Image 1 (cartoon, rainbow, N blue to C red):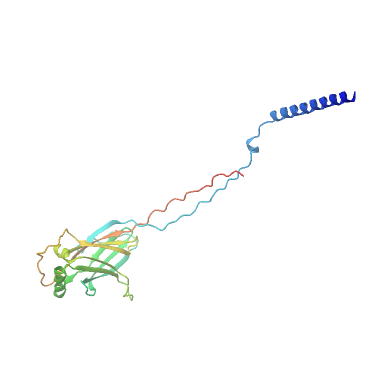
Image 2 (tube, helix red, strand yellow):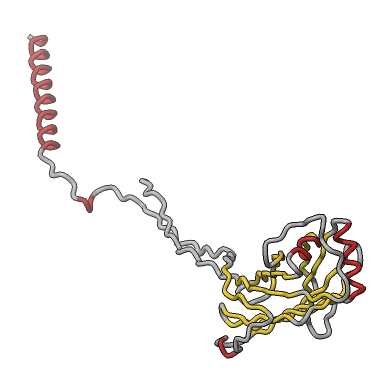
Amino acid sequence: TVFNRIIEMSKALTFLVILSLFALTLSFEAAPPKRDDQAPHIKTTVKRPVNTEPQHTKKHATVADVDLDDDDDDDEVQGQKLTHSYMIQHAFGDNNFINRNTAEWKSAGSKANLRFTESILSSQHVQEFNRLVVNKGWYQLRFRPIVANKPNQSYISTSIPACLLQSAQFRELVTFHTDNNGYLIGVDYRPYQAAECSADLPKLQGDVEIKSRGRISFGRVGERPKNVRAFHQPAQE
């Protein structure tokens, strides 16, 4: 009958669909795997090295320790010499600064020859110094570069209790901190020998010589850090 024919045709069509699906499955399983050159493309971005050049730092190391009596020849300093001259001024309490003596060094690389001129406290200044000691005041110094036709240069100042300098028999030690070219950037000032203030310091009379010793603490250019290559993490598209 017609109904039976329709049923048989439906069965045949179902069988054909199942057979087609089975053949398609076999074709996928038999397909060869993809080679590496057929893998999906991953884009990698490489960041160029960044040029990092920080300001140079300074490291100080004492390389010269000489005083007024040092007879080292200037010929020990090799290469081009740079001469640095400073006027040393002093003040007693609130008084104005007046010239005392000079310091000069010739630097070349990490070597220098340091010289002080003679420094004498006159009897008038000695009386002012006595008043400083009695009043527990501070003896003040400042260092001003000597530049032709430019008298009003900036300066570096420092001070110590006057009684300490007298207890050390007016022997002073000045450490000049400079950059790597020998230009002054800071000063340390103290008695050359250990000293303590005491209440029985004698009153000074007449002229007094200040005996200066000094050292140069040169700055040194810090090493530049090596460039570090920075990479982005690979990002899959």
